[in-house]
Length: 163
Image (cartoon, rainbow, N blue to C red; front, side, top):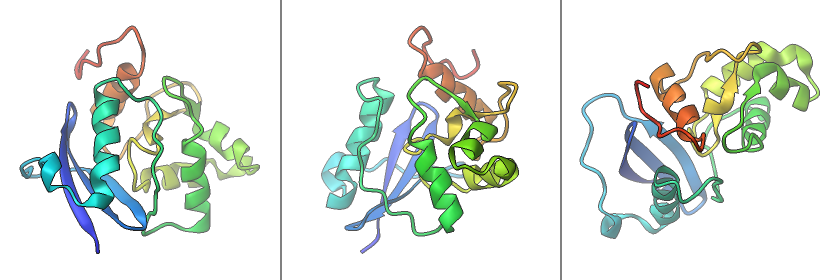
């Protein structure tokens, strides 16, 4: 059975989708936001993802340890998404870095496209992928959120949205 929960974060409402197979998606909600799900009302399959995301935003967790089961994705996209998990907290990698990690340096654009289709934002940290020159390039959640997440993960920053 597919379950959904809503979690308020400092950068907007998140929708969590999962089942007994694992966490299927974490998405930003940019339209009319629903009421956050109370912890007592969470489906069992979403209790741990909810807890870990709250801990992340409270600076109590740096690395997620969750059963992830995306419902979409080609074999290549799944390789890219797995590589994202290897980009450490507070660090960044370029699209070329990810392509080279996959032993396919000519796949930079395909890496970018796969990054943009990541169904598990924040958990699989696509916000940590930047342009080769360090510039902030596209992010499905918007560049303000990407900038906030990168600043939030730096110990000296407070994660101000417009800072």
